[in-house]
Image (cartoon, rainbow, N blue to C red; front, side):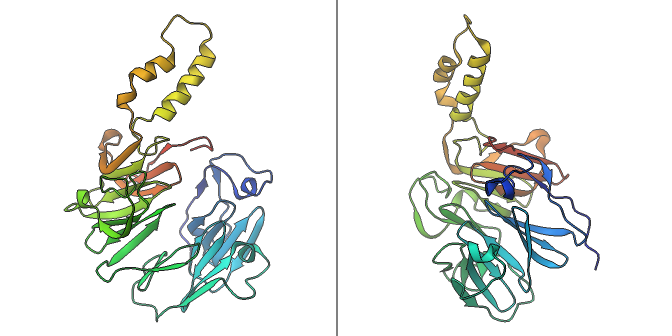
Length: 312
């Protein structure tokens, strides 16, 4: 079966650079597909798992090794969770990047026969997986999730009717409940109630969702402008750059201008906020990194914002 042509571009650290070896630079650079093509990508810091026409493959600092028999991946810098037809298994990172997956895994969970539809990782029957201990967490019976995403300290679930649930750490407003407290169990994001969502994303300490109409909602931490809202840290960084380049000047220093504008900066947005994109573009997909955000519009355009020290 022929694999549809698809070009994958990578931004930021390459697996080689993350492993301390020379790499191609901050990007964008092409992720080589090979004759089998690439249909999905699961990135970690120092390695990446790709799905090709021949199955899953792990890549890191020049290493390319197949992972036969597995269908999905959930990587981290400590463990790699793999899902097959009969089980979900967690391997230590060293075993995943070694010559073969040998010995006892760190965790395994048998799975029932494959249903006629598949929910992507981290969802598993009855709960969800995480790429770090305890590896599996049960979901309350009342939460029927069709999609689940993991942030650094929180999780979001997209319900069957397009509702959004959030739980976990909330100190940066990433849960969207209007407060900075943690939630131990999934709680409905009431600010989005009545607006069916089609996609959710969780970053380091911020969150996003896309409605069926293509509207983008964002909330949480905005320290690096990852919500596309005015950020004091980014403004101060630009001001330092301007002051260095301006030399002696009689104009008001940029830092004094910033002090007068403090009220306009937003460090935490604890409720979901509708984000206006240029030309009223409609969003198709959203993804959140640790401190940046990327969206693809229905017209196929890519927009990114937030922390750009490793090149967005």
